[in-house]
Amino acid sequence: MAKAQYAILRFSKYKGPEIGRIEAHDERTKEKYASNPDVDTSRSAFNFHLIQPEHSYREEAERQIAEAECRVRSDSVKLVEVLIAGTPRFFKDKTQDEIKEYFEHALEFLKQKQRAETFVSAVVHLDEKTPHMHVTFVPLTEDNRLSAKEIIGNKAKLSQWQSDYWTHMVSKYPDLERGESADKTDRKHIPPRVFKEMTHLAKQSRKI
Image (cartoon, rainbow, N blue to C red; front, side, top):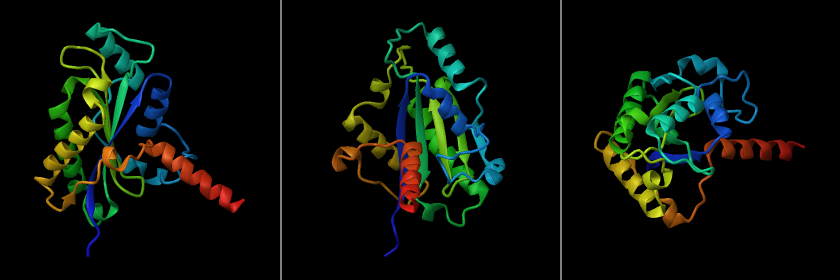
């Protein structure tokens, strides 16, 4: 039996100082990526944007929030990052044009869910083992409130996000399957960078 091919959608939320680190990773502004050994900088030139950032992530987030004149708390989430990916087998033998088409289709889904003007960047990475896209947006609601909680929601709403995303993707890519949502598996989400760093450190400790 052939292995399943999944449509992957993951959220991460950021409040302040870490936004610069997110940008450095997504926009590949660092010379080395010690915490993420999967990055092959010799291939970084093949990465491409579907939304090109006009300013730094932090500057753009602050600009949008100021223009919205919304209430901001000290613990407010100012930037949401969406990881769009798929299982390695899905991308095997696909051309760069086919890969681009996949991520364009995924981005269409996000733009149906979130105001287009709130998006900061959408960049596709081809310099790691599996193609994936990082999409960042400022979590402003339709009535200009800063509320990642309302947009992304609780476990039930996250599950609905996953179902809606799969429905959108499978209309064009019928071989894709929907994975089990976190509210059913009770898994805690670990941001991909943290997971990769943990894996890298574990390998180092085994060598020592």
